[in-house]
Image (cartoon, rainbow, N blue to C red; front, side, top):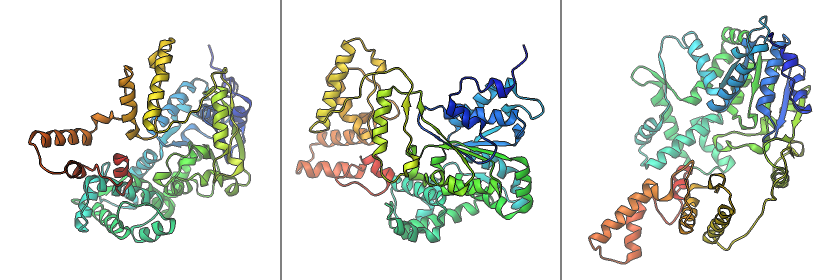
Length: 456
């Protein structure tokens, strides 16, 4: 049986807005897509349509997203659509669907000898040791959590296009919460860059360097820019609300003076702001490209109308968002129970009430595997673990450690047990503080995101 043409076959099953996005003219397109609205389906169908209609060869399309899993999902869907692609323009499975970093790494491996020369480079996928060495050279005493926070701070600075020389002024201007004194962070950041530049005759590049060097190669070498822009002519960016200034710089270098760009995102789903990401590029897309088509996907196929309605009310109250960026989702699934809201005097009372509700659900026939408890930070798991245990409800902790399984908690219990065994003298509160504070269990929250997260 002959395969149907893509233009006919792959428009089947799309809703009106998805179809509008897929059929939008080649050129700048902004798809504002809420949660559960079928954005990945829309992206892959648009790519297939552009290829099948001869607007671009499949090998000239570069689709980028933020996680390897999302890129893999996109490649899988493109392969599944491959049957109807015309031979003249190539198989849609040959579309490059990669993360920003994976795309930059491939390009840098190809162009590096031409723009740098014979100096070898190696990917630094774990920067902890180099940051620790830089701190030591700067004569700054740091803990393990401090080093993790410093590594994260350096990543934020590079993603925000902030150099060591400009770091102190930049964080002062925005009032950023930083792990150490700004001058110390800047000194360690500078030392880190110096150490990477010559590591036993090799240059070490971290993940941000992949982007920086790729952008610089295209910006500063006309031959490199020309070859790359001949290779890729159409770009698709998923989760565009989470691009950083550095990623936008790379995208600008890729594009040059062209505008064959499709972006998909939702300003209300920004989750990587701690890495320097900002929704402003999504919000400003129509200003940058005045002729851009804008399509809004607002049919939510994931959640019940009751859940969608509640989400709409919460998002409507969000501050700092342009009115036009807020999507009014419409639930497409059959109706379900109304969400309920309750208040409790403290966390323990809340956890106990949750445990009672779960016990009633199980008694009424709801499978335990269909019940989930979500909490904001890992430290909150303790009170729920205790409440569920007290209620005789078996549970699993997913996506994190159980409270009493955490290293610092196990170490603390061992230290307390040893002190009790040897009959330590002194006031109990003073003794306990002396045992716990060296393990990071202090009365006051430490500076730095990683250290504070563990403390909380």
